[in-house]
Length: 95
Image 1 (spheres, rainbow, N blue to C red):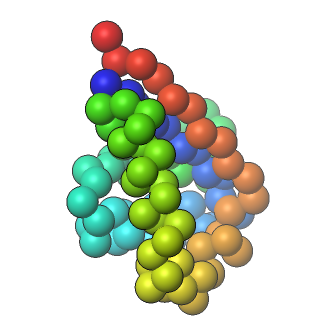
Image 2: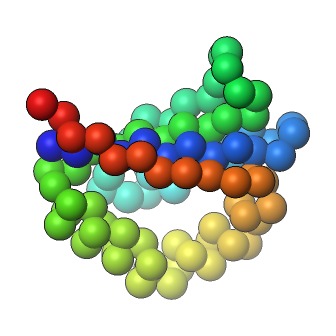
């Protein structure tokens, strides 16, 4: 089992808007995700956690997202790339 943790550093004033947008995106997908914002630590941080059985499942899910033209257009129209400055992805093995 893998835990995927994606961290986005939002522009000032955009963390809650970005978190809400990410939550709405995952509500429309088959994935179960936790979308979190910071209470302590680095400001304007949005963290998204998902779990997959392995790298194959994660890779196929990412390919589905890339090929979903409607979802990509919706995300671009909502301006999500204008809401954050940078991001990173961590992949953990769950034992």
